[in-house]
Image (cartoon, rainbow, N blue to C red; front, side, top):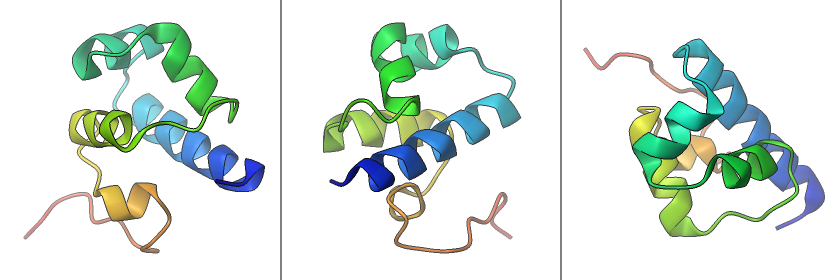
Amino acid sequence: MSTEQKKIIGDLISKNRNGMNLTQLQLAEKSALSRSYIADIEAGRYTPSVKSLISIANVLNLDLNFLLGMTEIQLEEEE
């Protein structure tokens, strides 16, 4: 995963986490990850595992394909 891809994923996680009014610590607790790991992912310093991304996506109600940049539109609510 390139540095640019890591930064994009980190930005998406941060934006959606803030949109849900969650702190990094709250996201970490809900996804069974450490707060520092969440911070490093958001900063683009780490390449998160698929397992970690699935946990984060589930907490943030995001489609994993969206989080990985494979789709351009994320529907907030399914009709």
